[in-house]
Image (cartoon, rainbow, N blue to C red; front, top):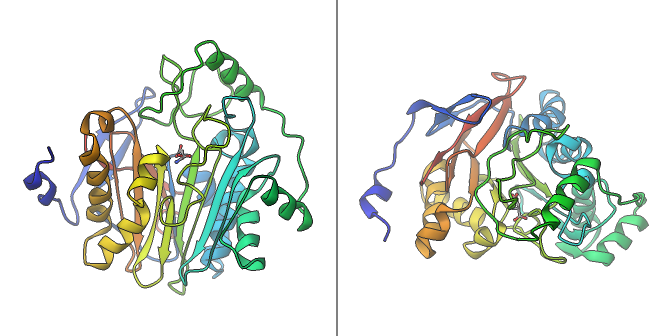
Length: 346
Ligand code: ASP
């Protein structure tokens, strides 16, 4: 049963505390609301710094938010340590299948899902948006479209780390999405999301939202989806309104975590509509989390979903199911990027 008073008792602007985190002893500030100047780019997780670094030069030079978020996605897809792109974890059959979407604040959007052997799904998503009358292309059709648009087909081999982890996972072959914390797993050369001792899954997603100097908002998500997922499984990330929603009138929101839970509540669309009615970004993210908890509180405690939102007035807020969801912010105040941790339900 959800405690309604707890739900209504929501901290507002300016509340700030420091919370302890991962096994490196890193700590990140938690803010209920962070007021930032535009242009600004915000990405999920600590590795969002890599995405932001791709976007920031464009924003800093007066470029469009749409170009900036595409660059953010490409930077993440290029960087094996970002846990997305072709070097990421495969499905349970040992194949990396990628999902991505991109959305502009005027409602233009495009996505790809179940895409194989493509280095930059975010750019294919943009092509879907700009060159087709459709919003989402999937599987071999998306791949054919991509090749027809001049993108190369990669070999599609697993990275060394991914192969190692997949083989480890095969020993038990259990698929149990669980709470995730982005961390370095000892024994892997790359910065990877941590696996729990029982080998269960975690996140492999980069979500980015940005506002340019002109106040235009855009967002993108790129992911390999839940690690060791069933073949053909598609999560929230390429689905507009689930993993990403942007509206220039209100703001932009993105998510990471167990995609099925996000799809069930149309997570980011819910957040933007809550913000439209006057809720702050954190309050809106918290409301989306509350709807996930309401379905099954015991289950919700055992997994992670994190949302982060940016309002058109430059307020950033986030909320997650369990502790450990971080997001990275880059703007003139934080040109090298700064990592914050979201408040959480549990
Ligand atoms: N949301 C992604 C999915 O469900 C996974 C993640 O964020 O790690 O595919």
